[in-house]
Image (cartoon, rainbow, N blue to C red; front, side, top):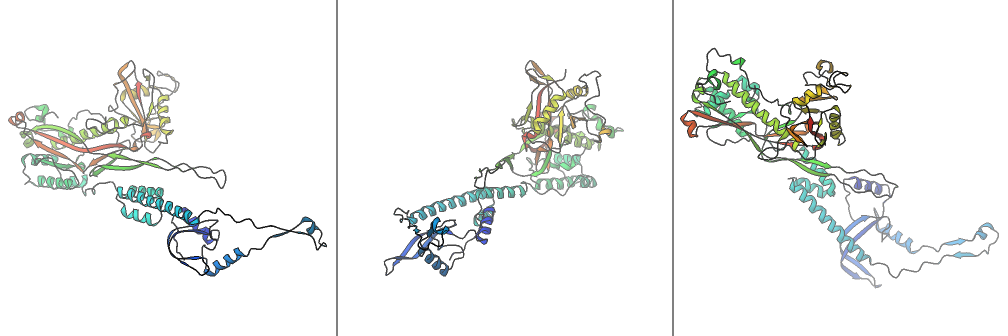
Length: 562
């Protein structure tokens, strides 16, 4: 007697139900003989054997072996098999004439016994070897797969349950998706708390420069720096301090001797609330829906399903299903550093009013934001830069012509098509281009003329479309405008005048930040700066950009606007 266990998958459940319904009753039992004894009638009886395999079959080699059989059942079956009567058939004439008692009967003679019956022990031995080899391969493959991703316990469970390698791949993918990205716990500090405690970047800079943390503001800045350091950001030198991203809410060398480079910050009825900021490129990628992650540690790999299995219609109930499998790859992020360098004088640091606090804060925030935004959009992927959307392999493309072409609504529709035919549509679909393209688009009218034929194609009536302060709607989608999008591209004989137009689901772009802040480091080691009492301030943040699904984007690189 043997106890068996059915796998907890579709095939196992189906086999178990057929056994309960009495459909499957016969089994094939493979074994190797260890010991035998000879009986008085010259036959041999196996007294010791090693099981190799048991499988459900429709036609077994031995009908006395099966599901739920007892010894008595086996004896009856064997006896019935040996005592089968000769089948007699009456002729058509005898069946039609019942009065003819002496009608001849036809007897079927037994078939001659086969003399070349295959050796069942050999067949069973080969089947056992094959089954054992396949089982070893299954176990080894599952263990290797789960060990690679750190799920050894899951591997043991899958092996014990008899799971296939395909089922193991699905289970590992599920575990990876549920496993949080390698990161640290978010800091328990937000911008409201920093404002409440009057956190001062100016005090942090001054303390790092003088190495004097005796004041309350400097002491609080050092506490926050230590919190940021515990989040995974390391200081690269002693004379530095870490600033959390939450503190960055709204250059030239800052010296008080020159009004334009710092002197106007020294108190003389200073209207610092009316400070006139420099004009910068607008940062729109995060606004359009690009995802951000903070607190990363180490390299990050995010699993991605790159190919899907295929469904097949079956011609009949015996048609074999063609095997197809999902394929997987990874989206990786590795640390890349973005830096900002400014200089200020010792006197500026000592004399400046609270106005310089907001100046430094805003400068750091907007400079870093502009750099991150450009990296997401068009990072080159070389010289330490991340790879941005426009430089990512696999995004869709629309070409105007050999020498470019004037931008039209048809080009925008073609960009939309390139994304949608690859199932790249999502909830954050938008166009993005520069002011040259937006100006040309705003002049387009429904009748095809740019001078007065029909209504404008670009709807700028934001109240009518109910989209609040969005930049505008064209072809049913939001459109963003920034000088971050290049307008100096070359196509054919059009040199340095072509513009880019991007369309896609911007939630498929993501940027990851290592740690929860940036490092501010001070130095006056430069001999020229030292003699002038100037100090350099270097801000460094670590990040990377990745595109989840490149097919969610399409770009035109030869749009002409004049």
